Image (cartoon, rainbow, N blue to C red):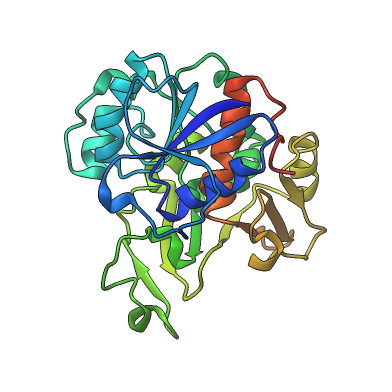
Length: 326
């Protein structure tokens, strides 16, 4: 059993990682205590994974950072210097350039060298880039769903990009993290639906980077659902001509174990993907008006975070990609 560490194990994504890795046949999860606030109350007779104080020289083969971006940039250099691979679940290394980071995070990136080195770990499109790399940046939840839905159609050249693309995205509250805030408190969220970060959401540049779209071609709006988990995105666009969108998806994802394509006019819902690493896609297309609607659903804590991170770990450590996930 190969020991792998989790920093941020008390957060929602970190806890999901602990659960997934506890059932993985080839690795032993180790909970790394970075700070007191990271602790979570556990029974006195707790028999779960080992817990260690965080140290870069801990001898672990790989460490997951389920931490805020500023913590990830603080911890990553020491881990890499100690020879430990890092899979970062924050946005610290996703955007590729210091200019992108400055614009969307409103801060100067402290380690532009590592920002340039990090490989973006969306296996369905970047699988070959992950093995052998020491720093893997796990995709965000909203961009994962959007890019899995959009990129095959953009590659096939069937979307009328001049007509624009609208992505209406809704997420469960766990996507905002475990840190308390007024916006995610029970009274604010329950029996409510609210949009946030309109035209300035930090996940937009990830969608653009992977899809190849220009910012002027995409309108993305994130909205908060009063539920625990799940992302459902409804994407609207016009096609160039009468095309079989379903067949494009089937051909592109034929060998992808976590992509499920629905028959024409059938659509996924959040229950279909809850607590799984699947991404489900449904399509409706009207050839006469060239209007198309794609509905894509994932679990934001699994395929949108911890499950994708395990996919990347499997690739980085040489295990079959589906290990511990199917």
